[in-house]
View (cartoon, helix red, strand yellow):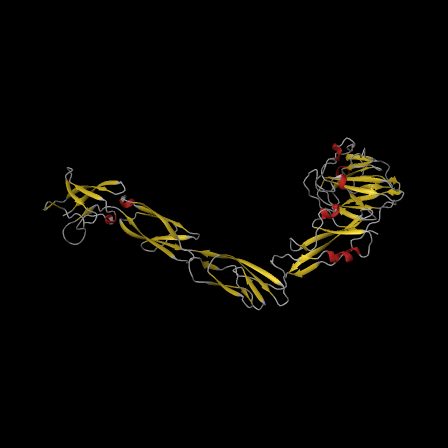
Length: 508
């Protein structure tokens, strides 16, 4: 009887302790009349580094290897076909035996490394009844097949397979007359598809693997059934799963191995675990909330179910809507009348009003005065000065002297932050003619700096006036006399140690 064994994909790091069929000591025992498929990927321990092993002369065998072991139970011929599935990959092989071990393999008794493309022959290789040669290759030498082997009951042979070129799988079919140990059968069982009823809701369910064993073994005696997460583990028989098992992916394939305890022959099959979602639950993906405001936003999911549990801690029947005031991640677990649970998640975008952390002022520069507004906050902001005409730039130039109002607005509408800023500068002229316009000379806002001193001079350096920051300014009078139109000078001493000097014009 011919049966298909699942493909084996090997991708293991090359460590001395790694258990892999790419190592001779972990060779796969071939049992029964079986067709099975394999894919070598990488190499394990270099057996030919041991003194008792002779590297095959026809090829190095060190790229992508798999070891198979044949333990014959009757006399007969050893015959097989190795068939690349894509029809082009180059597979080579060497056979060691009889009755050797992995530490003392000796020299191969068969060695084939024909390159099928170079030789112009099909990619299939193996042992048959037509060939008389026992070694061929590398390169264009040979046709890929070698002479069969007469074997005796009780003899063991090792088959080393290497893929020097290509990237596909292969089938190997044993067709010899010498009997191999009887292979157990891993009978198929239905895949598992259930909804989630436990917590937390994470698309993982407990699966009782033990109750599947009777149907997998189907009355076979002297067999052991184990479950594995990977094909590699199942083929080697390592890392068995415990029951109950929680799937780590959805869906997830689990492999089970049925091994004959008396011979170590085994068969492998698979089942799929799927966590169903028998109904659909969704949350909106376009919500926005202002974190700094008390106004709430409704977060709504599907109605009509038995129970709702929210990430906020709110729960209850018919609670398909909650009100939120903060941005962030939210989820809801919805339970239907049968107990099935489905989870939905979303992220709610948010904004907040800005916090003005600092305003940099460069003043006393006349037409070149500027301010830079520095803010803290997680949103995107725009800025305005006095007139509430907004811009993306936080820098304002040609700022006039005096008091100004800075506006910072969240672009999502989460509020406006304002702050008054003082830009110090002095008027370049004044006209003391009692018309109510520019009648005195004073620096706007200087009264906020009480330790400030202002001294005004004529062109000869004579002090004409010492102004107090709290005064109304200089009216152009010195010792009761009205001074004529002319240029005058001043020195400003600020309380922080800065000093400014400049000139002003008195116009009559």
